[in-house]
Each structure stands twice: as C-alpha cells, then as structure tokens.
Length: 137
Image (cartoon, rainbow, N blue to C red):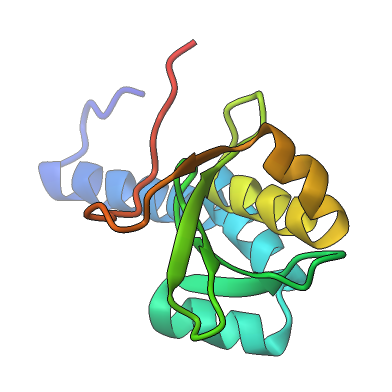
C-alpha cells in the first residue's frame, strides 16, 4: 500500500482502522463468537466473569473447568469444585483459542471417557497459568 501524497496522520488512521477490523473479524474473534454461541447462559456468564466455564462429562457427570487457552487448560474438579487433576488434550491441527475450547467442551460432553483415554494428566497443584500456546508448523 502506497501512501504517497498522504500525511502521516491519515496513514496512522488507516492502520488503526485495519487493526480494528482484523480484531473484530479475524480468526480469533470469529472463534470466540462461535464458542460463545455454544455456551449455555450460565457458562457464558462464567466465561465473561472468570475467563473459564464448567462442563459436565457425558457419562460420569464429572465436572471440568475449561480455561481460556489451548493446552493444559482443562481441570477436573472434585466434589467441592476444587481442582483434582489437570488434563491436556487438543485437536491435531492448530486452531484459534475459541475453536480449541469449543472442541474440548464438545468432546467432554459427548465422550469424556474416550477423551481422557488419550489425554495427558498433570497435577493441578503446580502453579497453574492458563495460556494460549502457539504451535509452529
């Protein structure tokens, strides 16, 4: 894009407009909107307030808390809703954060036993810092 004949302020405004458009319509924003559509009103309120939402496993009824992130972001909760064990599972392909969280939600709600059979467990007692992890291909 050439900005000959334009002043610096106009160029800065165009860049800001482009960034704003991308933030509202890029893959991360679309994935977040799709995730929110699939959340129940209670889950949406949890997610908005705390950055996580809880789901119940399909057959066992176990409670899981899914934090915003793509890896090591699922915690199984005990009867007191305290973290019992952490689970790490994610799609094979790199996806936007909201898409990964939606896949985790659907997997736990529809076939939790199969998911946990392939998931890696970790101790939730370690310092837990939910984060998005990028994967290079």
